[in-house]
Structure formats: structure tokens, C-alpha cells
Length: 300
Length: 225
Image (cartoon, rainbow over all chains, first blue to last red; front, top):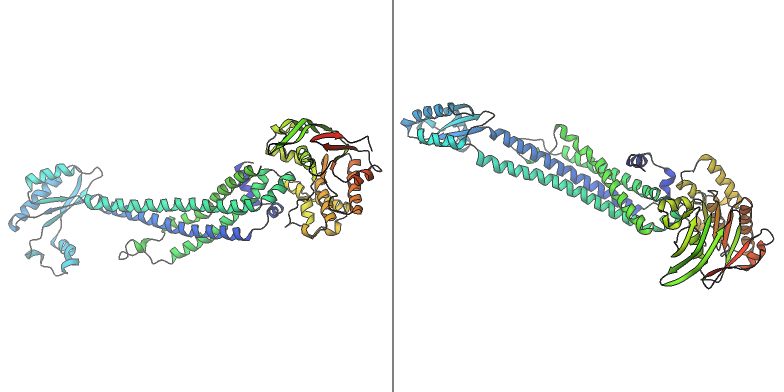
């Protein structure tokens, strides 16, 4: 029987054939519970992975194409060095724009630590220059050499040392989420295989009778596969539904909360958990089919 | 149909059957007898392909048993009705469903067949027990239900292993009558039994050959009854 026909039989069903396998209350509840739990956990792993992806993208986008030049010089040389630095920057290929931050902007940057009334004019605060790159970017090493020669008090910070570890951490977190999903999927397959094996072993006498009267192995296997696939599908639907409900009840994303409050789904992300029930059904279909084929071959 | 050519069967290092040849002709009626443990059940299992001979060749409907895959075996068993000594039912299904199982597994459980099922249950005297579960049946009722299940697919051959082993004389006569009726419909019948009274009673109804397993070999026990 083709895969398409097998899948069709799973959903169309055969009420008479379903009754051939005796009802097994314990394994039915076990499969339902395992599928529901695994689907619930998968929703969380998926949310973690998607949130990590969003975080990595945000950190990357915000820091990737900007740099800061810090000029530390005596007050009387500050303006001249700033002018010299801007001249160097404007003539550097790969730099789209460069501008010196105003006193107000620098005060705003320091406000979280020193309060809003900081007398910037009276303090030896370095002058900051914001650099925005174009798409091709600039040669940071070459620029440092030029600045060293022409603006001795300038220090270039291209954010690499901040950005890379953050992006790497977010990337690892996202990978961890996907690995968790893979492991949960595999564990679901293992649990359903164990339950199917137990059901097949408990029904070896039924299998012997069915063979005696001319049942093909595909017919016998289908009776078990259909039962376990539908149970797993129902369990996963319940689990995924509860998982999505839990996500919905999480606090909304806020800047203050950072990563934790941004753990839920957003936009298209809400569609992804809907894949979990059919995926679980497919895993159950494959796992029970393989278990049935193996047990039937052993009993032959 | 069923043809055994010089077959032997060995199990656990010991030879249970040896040098056995038999050809079951269509419409024939055979008894297979022999002492308990002589190998009658093993012989029947060789006849419907559950066991494969360790030597010689067993042909079922023109196919060598050794060359048959599991699907071939399933299809062959639809052409051979088997009545087991222990009946082998699915205890969670009512009698009617158990009898109809061969139709169910072959995808032939149509409305016409359901009507035939009622007739068949009446024929074996179980019309009123259709909804009962197998454990609720008496020994004779179980044997009759097993016979009904064996013939529901209208098989060409019916093999029965001690069909009267657990029933009284009156019931064994009734079962014999049902098997004779099947033979008159053209079915080939092979009954394994150690009950010589049953064989003697059969001579009034049917011309049968009596085969005997003795010392691992098959012998013709006597002239036609």
C-alpha cells in the first residue's frame, strides 16, 4: 500500500477493522499523555528559539553598522582634533557619515549614571563621534593607523568586541532551542514506539488469529498504526493548545523586561506551533509503523 | 490444490514426520487419524503453510510453500478454512464479528455478506448466539462458530483439527453433518481425529479415505468406508 493510501486510511478509518485490536486503556492514556506533554514542551522550546533569533537579529542590526570614535585630548586641542578626525573619517572609503555628538547628546548618555544636571562643559569628558558605515564597510585597521598618525587622542570602537559575543550567545541559545525540539521529537518517537511495542506484544494472540484467517501484515499493522497515530495527534493537539495558551498568558514584551518578557510568539510565529500536532502524528505514524513491521516479522 | 511430495518435518533435533506424500483431490473427503502426539496437528499445519517442511516439497494451489512470502500465505489461507481444536477467537468481539473476521480482513464485509453471515450462523445453529462473546459459548457452540468462520470465505478446502474433541456424541454428529454438507457443496475436507467412532459414523453419509500417521509416516488405514 502506498504512503498516500496509508495516510488516507489513517483518517478515513475502518470502524470494523478498528475493533479487531482490543481496547488498551493504559497504553492509550500513556500515549495521549506523552504526546500532550511533549507538544507542550515543544511550544516552549520553539518560543525560546524564535525569541533568541529575534534577539540576535536586533543586537546585530543595532550595532552592526555603527562605530564610535572617542577623542581624549586637552580642552584647548579638543576642537582641532575633532575637526581633524572628521576630515579623516569623511575621506575614508566605506564610511557613509560621521558626526560629533552634541553636549546635550553626551549628557543624555551619561545621565543614567550621573543624573540629568551633569555640567559637561566643566568636565574633561571625551568627545564622541558617531560613525555610520555604508554597505561595504570600512577597513578598521587602516583607519586606526591613519588616526594614530593624524589624531593621536582618538580611539576607534567598532563594537566588534561587544557585538560578536552577544550575537554568538543568542545564536547558541537559538541552536539550543532547535536541539531541544529535535530531542523532544525523538523522545516522542521513542515513547510511542515503546507503547506500540507493548501493545503489539500484548496482542500477539490476536495477531496469530488474524494471520490464521488470512489477514495481511499490512492490515494488522494498519490497525495498530491508526490507533497510535490518532492518539498522538489528539494528545499533541491538546498539548500544543495548552502551550500556546500559556504563551498568551506571558507578560507582553517590554524594553525593561528584556529577553524574558519577549519570550512569547509574535506575528507569523503564532502559526508555527500549529505544525506540532501533525508533526507528532507523523512521528507516531512512522514509529508505530516501524514497530509493527519489526514485531510482525519476529512473529512470522 | 494441496500436494505434499515426500516431505519430512524435524523439530528440536527429532524427526516428527517423514516420507509423506499426499495429494488432496478437489471434492475429496479425508480423515487423518493416529495416536495422540503422532503429529496430526503438525501435518495439518504443513497443509496450510503455517509450517514449512524441512525436506521435500509442499505445494499449495500450485505454489511452493518455500517460495511464498507473507502476503502469499495470507492469500492462501483465505482459500483454506481451518477449524482449530482450541478454536482461537478474539474474545473481545461477539460471535457474529468473529465469524465475519475473514470477510473483514479481506475487505469483503459488504451488505450481501452480512446477509450471508446471518444464514451461516443459522446453518450452524448459532443464529440466537450472534451477540454472545466467545467465552460465553459452550464447547459445541465454539466448534460450530469456528466451523462457520472457516467456511465464510467459501474456501476450496476445509481442514479441521479434532473438531469433535470437546463435545458430546450428539454434537459431534451434528458437526460431522455440517462437514458432510460442505463436502457435498464441492469442498475438500480433511479432518484430523482420534475418534474412530466418528469415522465409523461417517461411512453412512460420505465416501472418505482414512489416513493414519504411524511411526512418523502416513499410511492408508483401510479401504474406502
